[in-house]
Each structure stands twice: as structure tokens, then as C-alpha cells.
Length: 302
Image (cartoon, rainbow, N blue to C red; front, side):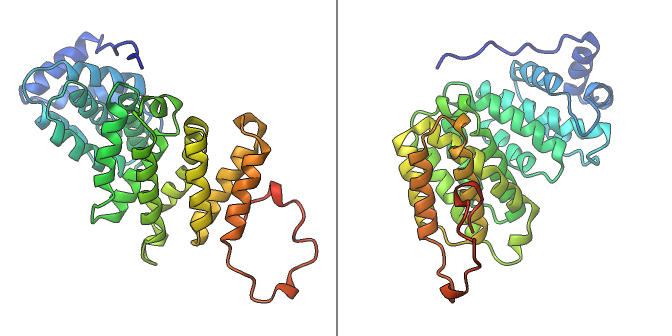
């Protein structure tokens, strides 16, 4: 896959000057300008963030100190300063593209991906999606994301996994993979983490976001990987026991049954049969409500 056009750096002379000053330790002007031009808190200016990342990627030496400072800003989601970690996410991805400060960049990105603030997650998702679409980026992200599943902080782990799963809802990210197996293995491990969560962790917002992200990406993987993806999803349906996972898989099947997906009815029927076959048996089948079997192909399963 050929790389896309290179992202341009900062065009604003005041921002360029402020970045130079920030690298010398005077960060106030850069933080003020980024906050001012960075959008309205809940809707970050992703074009500016990408331009900042491109500018940072070209810098020689070490810039981790500045990016760490921007990453650490804890402004509320509706405050202008929340754009600073959004810019930092693109800055860290810029360092990955430049093959500089790689370990530090990945360590910072998992925290940004797992952040509880929506604008920060949106910015990190955008940065990682652009990285995954580049040659080698998708494979590198899957490999690193597998390690993130082992983090002791389950809120960060689930939150980062939700963002990674969202990245691979992109056809460009899927096409950039060298093969399907690493991603399918990662998705299997993410599912295992979801169903193996403690009772307390089941109430986690980050776990909920991961479950919500799964259907779109599972469907995209089936479309991208063809028979291999369909076989993998059928096996996941056949082994599904946890009700939360069954809901996510049911929603995946419903999406694939839509004509817009380009998949035939036979696939949906096959997957639906596998998921229905793994359902817990009714305690007393004679008590099934009359009419409960109607319209099964158009409603989620339990």
C-alpha cells in the first residue's frame, strides 16, 4: 500500500515561534495558542493537531519533555486546554513516524487512548488511525496493543483497547495489515478480557466502550478478510456465553445482514445459527411466550 500524502506542518508563524520557545522551556505561549485554536473542547481541531504532529515529527533531538507536559494537562472535556493532550497524541505519533523516542511514545499513547475524556480519545483515535494507514503502522499498533491488554489498570486497558478496536473499523487500517492473523488474535484476546472481567469491572465505562466498538470492527474484519474472517467470527459465536459479548456479536450479525454490507444472506444465517446454538437452554421450554420465534432475523439475540 502506497503512503498517502505527507501531512503539512504548522503554517501559522506565531505557532511556529511558540513551538521554538517551548522547546527552550518557555511553554506558556504555545499552550495558549494551541488552546485558542484547538476547537471548542468537545470538538477538537484535528487538522491543527495533525499539523502539530507533522511539525514535531521533523524535529531533531528529544522532545519528550514538551509532549509529556502537554499530555499531562488535566483540563475538563469542555475546556479549551483539553486540546493540549490531543495535540500531544499527534506529536507522539509524529515521533513514531520519525522513528524517534519510540518506547516513550507508545507508553504515552496508551494513557491518552485510555483517557476518560472524550476529546482526548477522539484525538488519539485520529492520530493512531493515521499511523495505522501507513506502511508498517497497522502491524506495529496491533503488536503494541496486545501488550496494553496486560496493564493492571483495567480502566486504561479497556479504554485503550476500545480505541484500538475503533482504529481497525477503518478499511485503510485493515488494508495496511500484512495479514489477518495478528488482528484476529488481538480481537480474541480483547474479547477474552471483556468476558473475564470481574463483577466490579463489568460496570466500567471503558469496558462498555470496548463492547460498543466491537460490532463495527468485527463486521469490517469479516468483509476485509473474506472466508478467514467469517470462519473466525463463526467460531467466536459458537463459543460465546457471556451476555454482553452475545449482544455485541448479535449486533455484528445484524450489520452484516444489511444489504449495504455486501455480504450474502447465507453468511448471516450461518453466523446466527452458531450464536443461537451457543445460547443457554431455557429452564422450561414449554413456557416460551407465544410468537417469540417470529422475526428472529431482524432482532438482536440474547
